Length: 370
Image (cartoon, rainbow, N blue to C red; front, side):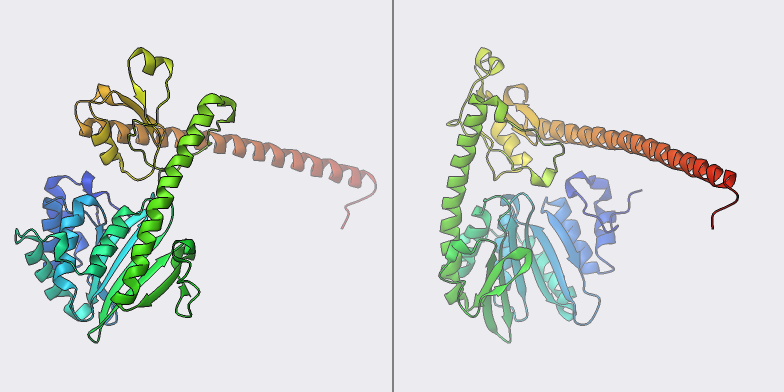
């Protein structure tokens, strides 16, 4: 039986319904309230990424969610409920292709009641609209979910301490808001980013400015990718294939019928080859491609949309191909290690023979050399 609390990231989509209770219990660290909350999330396809009840008195209890469209209604509920809670901390992080998360934290001594209350909020059936949020949170949600520039780090933190609200924003690209980063309040932050904090009223315009500029930069990136792909089509010799590809390093794709080029298969079958663009997961790509006369590649996996009748089939085929690719890579590495070990052994044997030969010569000259 699998151990879910093993210090490794667990893909919750691969947990069978029969194991939901086991996983929730192992992750809850003895907290009944957290266990019930996690079980509810698993049963209702609310994707969580991490949690903690707090171990030292100074620790924070927290729950971390995937920052995505399928979680956005629940995240809005949580923000609306706890925006004015003293000692709360909410953190949004989006680094496309690497991480996208939202977490909420409270002091350890508030954790049990906090988890119990959050379960009530998520399960009450009420539909809390985007307009119910304060302006700073509306801007933050729009900026974080719309941030698609590959690898650019963007973080927003909201906190309430001693009933004083504070907002913090950090980005790896200071050019988004160059007027702000020269201020004394600006400071280095994680991932080589620069951050600045202040009241929600003072920081909200900065987040809005970043959101506008990142959208423009994303559009420019898309156009650059299109030109690059067109150039590779007309000049195949310029195309380079990487030796090894990491899943996190690959920019996801989205169907874009305006960016087309043809090959024999596509032309003969009235297909359109769609351009590689950033911003979507394999699940979103599968929905866009399913049943369409489009061909594209996601992470070097070719998808012919006309061959699939459901998005789930595409996702399953992709994951199978990815696992087989990893297996082939491991086998290749193992063979290379065997070759390297054999080469090293031959080198050692050769060095030993040379040393023995030198020893024999020295003995012939009258004794061992000390």
